[in-house]
Amino acid sequence: MQGVDLFIDACAVLARKGLAFSALVAGDGPERARLEAHCTGLGLASCVRFLGQVSNTDVVYRHLDLLVLPSRSEGLPNTMLEAMGADVPVVATAVGAVPEAVGTSSAAHLVAPGSAAVLVEAIERALIHGDSPEAALARREVVSRFSLERRLEAHVQLYRELLEERTGVTPACAGSPAQ
Image 1 (cartoon, helix red, strand yellow):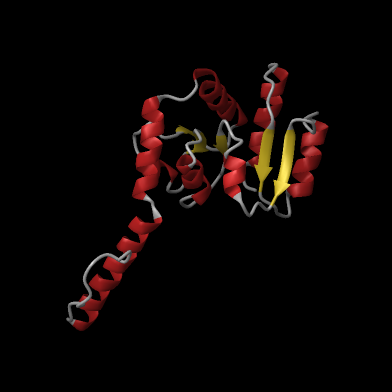
Image 2: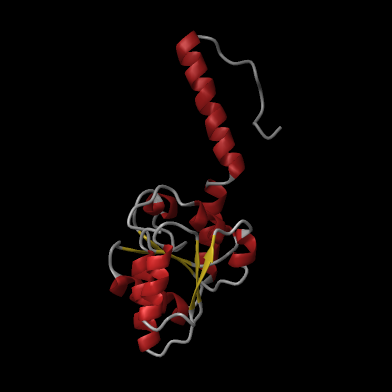
């Protein structure tokens, strides 16, 4: 749960500012007990709920006003793509492939990693200013670039190129993998 501690610290600041909210933490791991104790110590037990492993994330996304991905390191997070696909606004740290996936669009509020204060500002901005039609469109564009079909097509193309490069034979298969 890399970065969840920063999210919890950000929640504490938001609560002290008088913002009424409910936060859900999905996932499980060896740090969970420590993070739950940290929440309790900060007086957040009533507003931060730990869900553990979630098998049906669609149900969770339907209840979110905002997804916060506070990772200190990351690849290309499926969580972010799934939330965008469910039309949930995203605040994420600019780590790993996140900036590349989002590009210069308004698909997500990107922040520097490692700071609860920066998360607080981005969360407040996202919640206070709401979502724009441009941001919703940008999220759909990001999701379409990383759809399962697009990823399958890219893998098939890579295999074709490798086969031709290594054997000199051009594969005879035609069409996309979805056909």
